[in-house]
Image: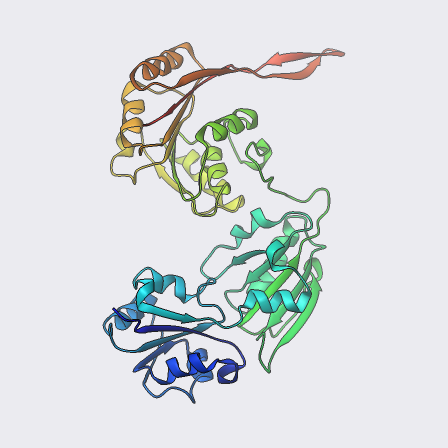
Length: 402
């Protein structure tokens, strides 16, 4: 089918900023869809039927698909495929049926205003996403472009950043970039007092913190103190070994069975923004704690279930990796995890007792793989002196499904 759906980026400068091609696509469309602001900016060009996006948004997609084969134009802010509606439409319309003419993105405009190189800037949209998703990006000297949900977002960001020990961070709030109403104002996060902020805004955040700031390290084996727990937690050294064995790859799904504090699933999610994790625990209090930990560490997308495996595993989306903690497991649980695992998937299980170790040896006989023993000793006081005290030895079974 010939392209029938035009996705046109429009900036705050309106029709004047559109190329001749973009103008022709909008003026020649029988249906023009966009937000109220977009339709107002392009009013002089629209000859067909204008339609503001309804709520919920999928209703608008259905109206667009009903015009398949007719010339339709969708207006979006800046680059439609950068945190924009272009990504939504791509799930419903093949690329061969569309033509996209982007305008200058908000990222490009923001970086131009503050003199940052876009390749070293982290970006995040808080439109429809929890504020906590900002937490992993708060690294000393990081530069972040934060797309706002509304006029209140910069104030919320300032409070959140300050509460994690990054109050010295410099914030530049930019409104209506690229248009006649453009305004850029600056403030320290812990002294933020900007008012009358426009709904259309973003923030350039130059992160500065104290030595006591809460920083989420970039590699697995994050400090145990970052996780609320009741002692049921895979300790950081063992957790780092578990994540190395699970070998997360972009866009994969993990089952964390017997999740305890949720630390394995959380670290899996921190490895890639597109990863998924389902955490299962029979204890409702621990499941609730895992949910809180996931929010605090910036990955509230962790799916937490209360249930007893293997029964709780029935009907779940197939995993690319399965982790079973060392609290106890039997052949039925290991068999269920292995059966559900996709080809190429990794299964990792820990044991701390001879009984659970025997279950791992039996699983290795059935499915292959290898078992490694991990022993740790920590220096502790012994009267006026010191000695190394051993922690429980952990046996780790790792198998890759062919």
